[in-house]
Amino acid sequence: MFMPPFLRSGPVVSVIRLQGAIMASGAGLSDKSTAPLIEKAFARGKPAAVALEINSPGGSPVQSSLIAGRIRRLAEEKKVPVLAFVEDVAASGGYWLATAADEIFVDPTSITGSIGVISAGFGLHEAIGRIGVERRVHTAGKSKSLLDPFRPERPEDVERLSELLGVIHEEFIGQVKARRGAKLQEHPDLFTGQIFVGRQAVELGLVDGIGHLMPVLRARFGKSVRLRRYAQRRSLLGRFGVRVVEDMVGAVEERAAWARFGL
Image (cartoon, rainbow, N blue to C red):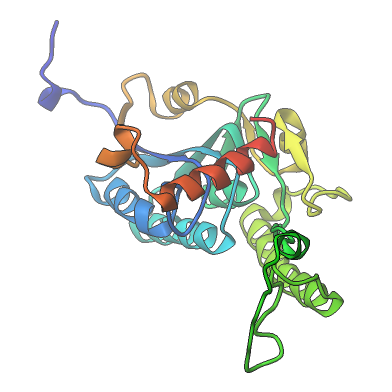
């Protein structure tokens, strides 16, 4: 017997799709681009739960923190449980997002972890010398030209960068410990940036179990559970394959982030 949508019963779960690299600008995930989705997912009606569909190789630690923080604040304010479901990868910042959930589920082949911080760039000082270009930089403040790619790398710059990365790394570790707590198991590589697959992550307490979205939700909320989906929409230009320079750069950065995990 057909039943109109407005007469259908059953608990509703809001599903937020978090797909792509995490970056402050461009087409990736950011607090600005995901905030409307997250706010609606928690505010519309009274969902039985909010599910996060995560497929992200990571990116900006600041944006990861902001997105995860928003999810936690709303979960606590609305008293709604949050479940995360990892697809191909939730590594580095992607795993930071997953820690916003009360429970994390993965596929047996999902990649998680990579609890570390990375900074990458290029040294171009020899290249500009070959083409006869002279670099001229004038600063007030000895650290103002820190890690200038057009100058030879200086040991003091590398030391300072290592200090900064260390501080961010400690924040990441603190987030994981705060959210996963006693579930975490002792492992020498847990916080070294190492990645773990499926059941390895379960054994280490990084995630709670093996499971896919619909089977877990039906087991938890019954066969009549309904999904209300929220996902970022690509811009009109993006849908027609036209990109501005910023989007092109962002696409290259995102491709590089996925490539680190063979994806």
